[in-house]
Image (cartoon, rainbow, N blue to C red; front, top):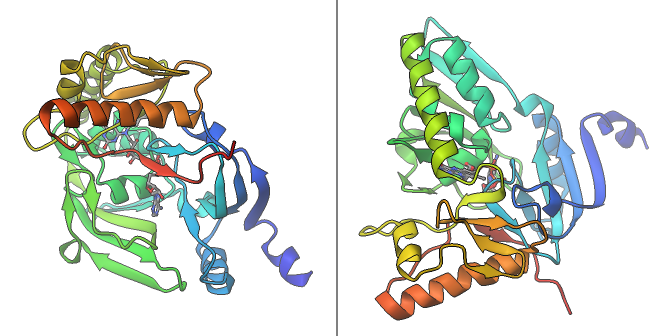
Length: 301
Ligand SMILES: Cc1cc2nc3c(=O)[nH]c(=O)nc-3n(C[C@H](O)[C@H](O)[C@H](O)COP(=O)(O)OP(=O)(O)OC[C@H]3O[C@@H](n4cnc5c(N)ncnc54)[C@H](O)[C@@H]3O)c2cc1C
């Protein structure tokens, strides 16, 4: 009871929480147990006391996931309040960002403080933690470009600061250990003229609105580009622009974006994705890799 009172503002426990509906696709089942954890001490406590047999899934903004319709067993963790922070040490030109901080807030902060090279985050709807794990990027930049170090906590509750040199980053890939949670990261802050930053933000925003289905529920790019060809071109070549399965549809505007047409479930999205992969494999002998993370269980029927 004492422990409950101590942690009640720091850990919010939700049972059978409709997590799928909170993802960008807005599809999928419930999290059996969702813990919204508001500070590092509580996160460390939870990781230490939870039996290691309990699988943990960390959800950020849910902008790169399909939560399957049967939901997520085990423990889902979402980082709250104290993980949403940005500290800028101007003299050292270092910016420290908490992993639950939203990309839009990072790009705004950098603009306000004349820090360049973070403009690309203007169009990515994730959080810093998701960005690092996915090495998110666009318009020629990625989150690892100006990274100095990244702090993680592992499944045993041990905290470790990893310099960039000890990690591998590639196109939508990072070597962050699978069972670790990103807590925060440090970046080099490069001063840039505010007007130039503003122009770039505007350009990125315009390109997004004209080339991507921004008014639909989507998870962004479905597949990784191959080394030889963009995924969207391959999908176009098999004539899947606008293709529908159930409530899932290949966007007319950008063929590498799947959209929830209003009544999709996660199975529709995944079946449409697999249909694309099968067709492309058959016609071009190319394996398209999912960029979206698919988590949870299929619904039993
Ligand atoms: C409209 C739209 C446009 C997009 N455009 C781009 C783009 O241009 N470039 C691009 O790269 N991506 C893009 N994305 C995809 C997505 O926004 C990024 O991959 C983003 O980095 C995911 O962050 P998130 O917080 O939403 O992660 P989630 O989707 O919640 O999770 C993604 C993965 O990261 C893990 N994860 C999240 N946070 C942490 C953490 N703190 N510690 C450990 N693991 C964690 C999750 O467990 C999961 O495996 C787009 C998505 C949408 C919907």
